[in-house]
Image (cartoon, rainbow, N blue to C red; front, side):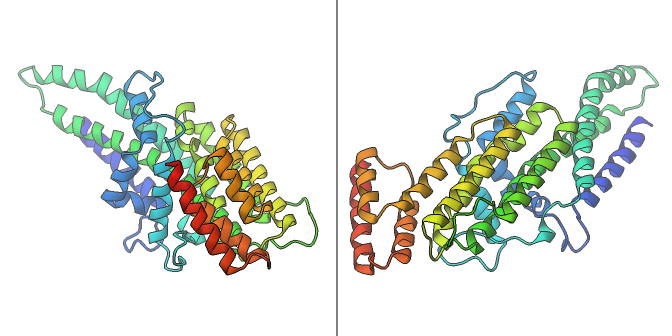
Length: 352
């Protein structure tokens, strides 16, 4: 009797979940975050990340803080995993850029669906705990009686199903936020002009839209979920955003001093909004602003700073910066660029 009731309720909850993430028969309208979770290898990659292991450890240790990885490197692999996985979904990714371009149909746009998913996550987790702590012990005791019905195994399996659904929704929302970052911010790097005649104070409309969307999502999730869950979902976004914005140097064809200021204002706007949501400094975005300020230099000045201060960014990021300098300054010709790139390799090799 009890297993039948719980089974029917679980089926209903599964239908609600499938509707929210648009899991139709053909899969054509499925949210990209849900589609990734259907791929066992991708899902396993995300579950092997320090952020997820820390969240799971917190859940299983009476909700006491658990340190799993050093925060400076905690999100490095995950950010790259998001970009690499998203790039495989995009047929228009440019050679060498490894940066995807995602359509509106692949992201969660309905705030009501987000609210429903968050509420469903909490409900499934609560029910799984109540079944394990309150219902199963009673069922097992009843089975010891002569006329007891053997229901505990079926109910135990359903308890695991409720728990698994709650965990899947948590991970899906974590992934969804990162896909939203790629969707909104990559066009800022790819298609925005950074040759500006005037030093205007306005922030790019796409950045304003993204900040608004991120704030709405945080407000919706915080109203429905425990603090440690929203922390898991938002922690590390700054690292991903920083990588996305630094990728701009690969796509930008030309830039001038006012364009550099425009990029730095974009970074500041993103950092300010995210700091208000996470109550953390988001130092990765500080580093990105520092990276773009290097574009005020010439090639020799950039190499001198690397020698004096040590390498802060990757070789590819330094190379993209030098190539952008070459494209933007007529006196920085191809021969000068090749000399700078050779010197860069020497400097970075010696620094290792």
